[in-house]
Image (cartoon, rainbow, N blue to C red):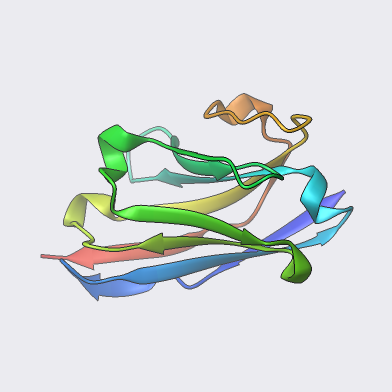
Length: 125
């Protein structure tokens, strides 16, 4: 079992920045591929970014357009999502998730086994 706790959400003006954190506990953190997803009201949950145990990362470039950066600190069992140049359309609940993909990386929500409770990000115009 892996427990995930997100933090760092809040209200920010358009153009501002936030850094989300996801602290993991339980099984060996470095074994997992870690992902960030988000869900806006009335919309499906969508992939934002993911990083595997070797530091390889991938992004939903249609949504983040080079504005977000995912990183991981294995010593702290924490994954981060640095979000810059935020837009009102980035408003959503952001979720951290973990998947056992043997070093693989995926945008598919169904492959992620563990989820945090989510943190609200609101970007005002």
